[in-house]
Amino acid sequence: MIEISGFGTVLLFCVGGIAFLLVTLLVGKILRPNRPTPEKQTTYESGEEPVGTAWGQFNIRFYVVALIFLLFEAELVFLFPWASVFGDEELVKETNGLWGKFSMIETFIFVGILMVGLIYVWAKGMLEWVRPKPKESDYKSRIPESAYKRYK
Image (cartoon, rainbow, N blue to C red):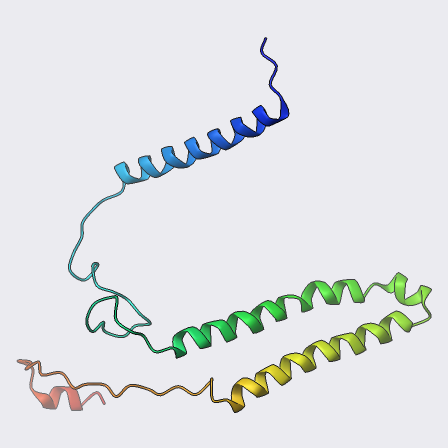
């Protein structure tokens, strides 16, 4: 029987993981349907019709809003486990309520910093969004215009 060292075990796990990944990707490539259409091949960016190639410049606000969202979302995720740790009744009883007061002050400081960040972002105009003006279509339908006006 062959005895494997600790490094050998790690190597086997790495090789097994890579092999599993490659086999899974290969099976997926073989089994999935491949029916490309012009619509599937177009670039998609927030529901707007693509203009030009995918290498064109995008409005930086897409990224700024995404980063602001991630920042505030990540910070808010901390509030849930924080509330469960700070709401421990045994600690509050052992410290004669000092733990509860400390946790409330700490939470208000945390939320206050978040609010200062939100006010800063708002004051800088980072949340303003210039909406594009829609272009009217030049498509001529065989359906009379009066049929459309009835449903407006």
